[in-house]
Length: 102
Image (cartoon, rainbow, N blue to C red; front, side, top):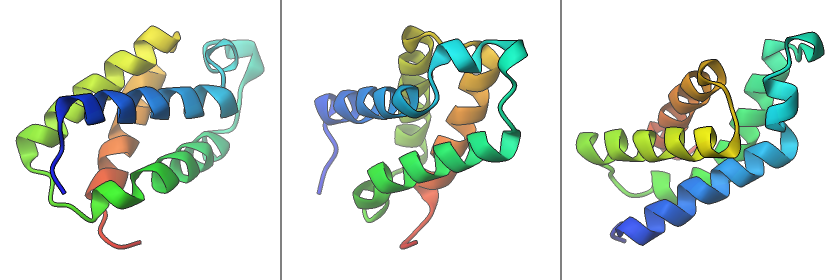
């Protein structure tokens, strides 16, 4: 199974949409609506794990992971998330992407 640029675009856009459905930017960006960090991690883990399961079966090289991380960050920014959440989610994205067979 090989990755093609359009597949990456679909993957990161879909992830951004799924995350925003469960944890909308309006809530993530509002300091008065503080959501516990543990809950945010749970949302990200569940969303990323389910979506990335097939991709984890294929070896993804370092450069491809960097490219995917950048595309994911852009998708989250375009969705309306602030940089703090974008950084956190991108780190979790790479962690989930590099896990094997969970």
